[in-house]
Image 1 (cartoon, rainbow, N blue to C red):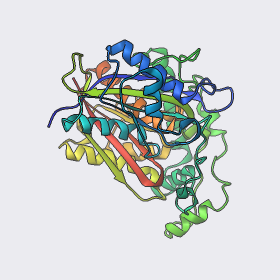
Image 2: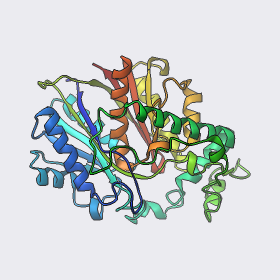
Image 3: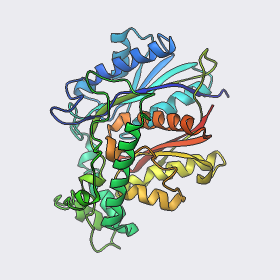
Length: 379
């Protein structure tokens, strides 16, 4: 077996997923085209053995194998395939690339993800999953269910929301996101970051998922030990939806300096009602398979699929604030479904080099109880 290495990471800024958002007028194809051009400029490679792109909403502007389309429109010499495992798609695209390289069947694979939530909204594919009882459960209600089961308070969730906003604002001010960033048009930063966030403003927000018809009934039928669901998450403690893309060059034996070794990857599945815990399960699995403990990892980039899941992760794995989402996360900077995994990998690699640390993990939880993680070792 060969080793698979990360040689370069690029990503767009994250634009608000709404009319007038910074990337709302930019097609997902154009986002990929810009990142491929940036990779060519940075590495000199004008093609790869494959191009693997994760995307959760594969219809409309994101239909028709967007990876192959981007290769054609840019002249990037690569077959191209698009995969979907909901929000973990970007992580799984990079894991697939690493597996292809490690097997010896490929030498270079560009992998990552893209999502224009502005143009292809969540659930707009009308897939059969969304009509199932567990599939129709809103992720915010699932997060509220986890908060209820774990006993987290509104005050704890708000404190986490403030932490991630503060860290994101500080990181942007210090230029920590600059190395991997490729500006798009006039957008040069993650648009959701609110430098002036306060605990008082967060505490004043109303619960976001309390009035969703039929949702609590699904939870209580599935979890009869609960008498009710405490709706505690607000806009300030939930991931902000955004438009973005990210790409990672994975390969072996290239005439380029590697940034990190892909030391492991794992997927996991959990309960579909408390669905967002599977990212943590994937982290536990990838560390166990590598013979490591959470104490061996100095950088955790964990998609902030609501504050309660982050608090649970830190408590269960004993991960302090000094190692967990230290430059802010998706609550503050935005979640672009299929793109998020690649963006987190870029952030993890950059932070490993900034610290001179050895091991880092990037992980995402997804719909229907799926989760994926990648273990990285700085080179």
